[in-house]
Length: 295
Image (cartoon, rainbow, N blue to C red; front, side):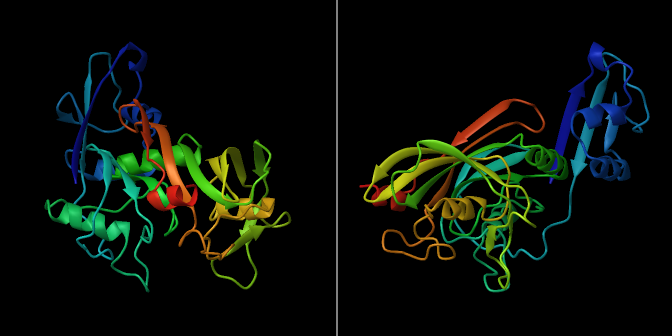
């Protein structure tokens, strides 16, 4: 993966070292270490430079990212990949149901990562898989993929700082919920289970979910959810805790009468571009299987 990023230094940045400037751009310490190891990684006015060099107004700082390694444990498989957006730094994909993000021991060749490995291998582009907002296997919708180490580092920091706004749509069992509300209940592992989570006020990590009811139909409610934190199974456990579990959820409400998988969809992402800073908004419509429940 090759990427060249060019910065033109203005008056406000005059006097900063290259390292200070790049840290203001949210480059991580690891990013700087990796760039220093590359022969042409950092150029100041077309000449190799160190991170301690000072910048002056009118300077041109060039960052050359070269990644030749690949994710060796992710075999390329010709799977369909629905690309909503792609540029030199990131991709936004719309993930279908029944597709995990990563390969696993029992599902080594049917993941989003496998499909992306094929997509880049077919273009002879080395690719390291970096997924920013991971979705459960049967959760559909939008997910962000970083295309190189710098965008990956910046997007990961943005996610940790809650600078990526995520909206989900879910269909829960039951009607009569308060029109909107917030669930602030810590989550922890369920004893005796490797994958299940539970509300645990004694040992759990803080988890906050905001919800709003959009529609009631057929004994179910369509709700919009915004995550303030990103714990494993957060929406699924919080809705069950409220008494309105997601329909079709094999772990927390295994009733597949209306739908064959958990009715959860990542419908909207909003964030600033990690390199340009431009605002970005992406949406994905409600999938057909969830629409059918509401007809």
